[in-house]
Image 1: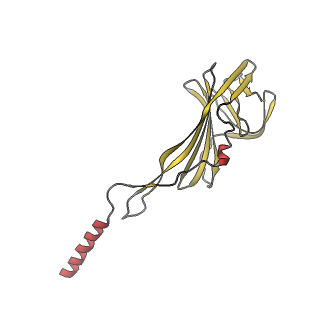
Image 2: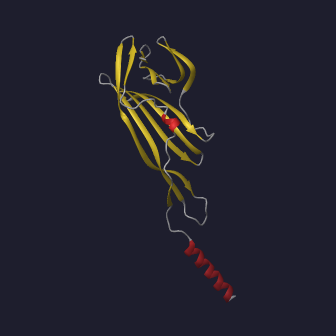
Image 3: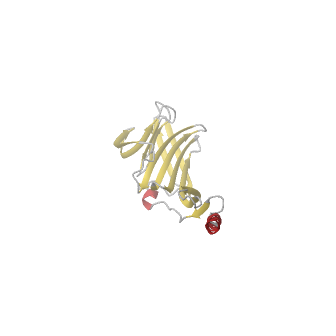
Length: 207
């Protein structure tokens, strides 16, 4: 009995000393780059001028430069092991941002490409915004690359062809809403091609 008790105590002590220290373990992974095919969804170098016209006038937007950087963030947690420490997985994720501003108006067009991954796979997505002043915006969100069948909650409608102010555009992503900007239209070829600020005022890109 004494030997058995001694072996049991030794086993408990051994287990206690083998347990990991308190707190999750941080694991840094390789950087996650944007796919070249995703970068093609923003068809600008970054300093272009873009002209939009409507029945009421013209708006000129100027690119503010393409901003490329990496953001370090946690993308996955593994807490499956009973005797092992929780593992938090981090990586540097590539981002690209581009903003077009107008000197004459409060309107701003933004593009943001982001890489991401997690336990459901890897994906890239593009967010396109038309911003009207401080409080109003219309926003499209499109997956530009993925190796997964997971539903990432994209935000857009799609038509093979749309006629806007007499011009035909192909492969159009768009979103209509009740608040302003009421409509936003985008193509991979030209970026934002049109927006509607109110029920009557539709602005389309000058090509």
